[in-house]
Image (cartoon, rainbow, N blue to C red):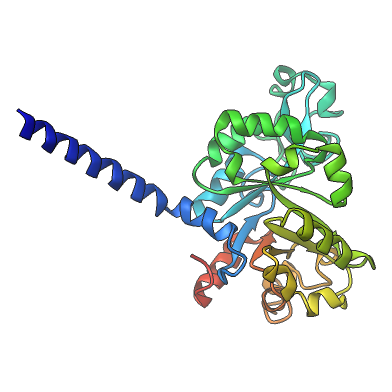
Length: 304
């Protein structure tokens, strides 16, 4: 009897160890490790508003399509209903993207759910405005989530992330300085994955980066620039050296000095677009062309 009990205990221990090992080596676990490794040379791809070419922007279907194609990050924009539910909506009004009018704050969640999203051609669909909770449950254990336009809703978003068990895969961000963020969110800042957005067109850009890295070592810095002549772009090795990754957007030209998605895809000039961004230190790229970028990076063996 004792021998049988011992055998059962050993078998249980081996099973537990195997499960733990599997979790530690799962694709999502490797993604989390990659996020926190500033020296990893693989490129992480972020889908801007999901796959909005094939589904309404910021819809659950757009995010599902992006997840299915293998992106590492989905970008969402936060807003709030009149009954204090965090929803996903880029604009301050719902006029452009839905068949409704006004602000999300003009509606309760129940009222907002009766409104329908439009697709990229402006046609009304059957898709509704998702809540942050719905998106995080969809993304749970699959992809990272870039919380754009979230600064005013950090506390509410944090609560949702804790309740859904997704805090480790959400990236909070803001364009404000370290001192401003610390003043507004004195304790929360130490409990979240954080990425400052820094305009390299401003003369104080390097000082802003240095202050953040001195105080909290953010997981990454989102660098935006209308001109590509900033000294930080040419000498940005200190960002990785001090523990952070570099995020550059390949969206419209005003965010990247003209080294954008359209140059890569429409003009077939990857050298002056995606290659340029990678050559300037980015290992996280947010794109409106996730399918094409993934195919290119996999050809280069720069995407896991």
